[in-house]
Image 1 (tube, one colour):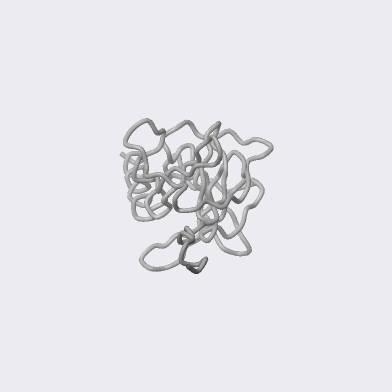
Image 2 (cartoon, helix red, strand yellow):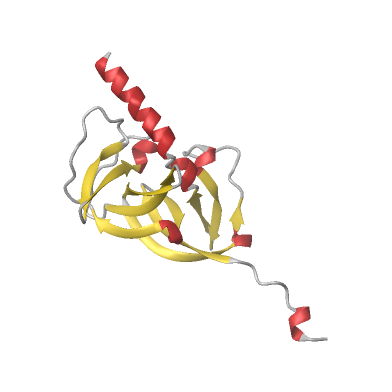
Length: 170
C-alpha cells in the first residue's frame, strides 16, 4: 500500500494571537488581527458605556478602543507596563471596521490544530458562552478562543451605547 493511503488526513491548523486578561489566556484568529500597538493616549467619548475606553487616531482613522475586561462584565482594566491595544477587523453591515481591543499583555502567536480545540464549556467561564469559539489545548493549559463576530458585534455594542446615553440623559 502507498504511504499516502496509510497516513491519516492532516488536520487543519490555524494560527492564533494569544493575550492575557488578568490570569486568563485568550486568543483571536491571527487573520483578523491587523497590528498590535502600545497603549497610549486616547480621547474619551462622553456618554459611552464603560467598555468603550475612548478612540485613538490610527494613521488618520478614528478607531474605538474596547476594554475587554469591562466588555466581559468585569472591572475596567488597569493600565500597566505591558498593556497593549490589538487592532483587528470587524464586520458591520458587510463593511470592514477597525476596532482596538485593550488587553493586559500580548503573549505569542500559536498554532492550533482543529482537533486541539474543544467546544465552549456549558458552565464555569467568566465570559458569555456565545463569545467563545472554543477552548484551545496548549500543553497542560487551555486558551479561550474568542468568537469576534459575537464578542465584538458592532450592532450589539451600538445598542449598548444607545442605552448608556439614554440612561445618562434620563
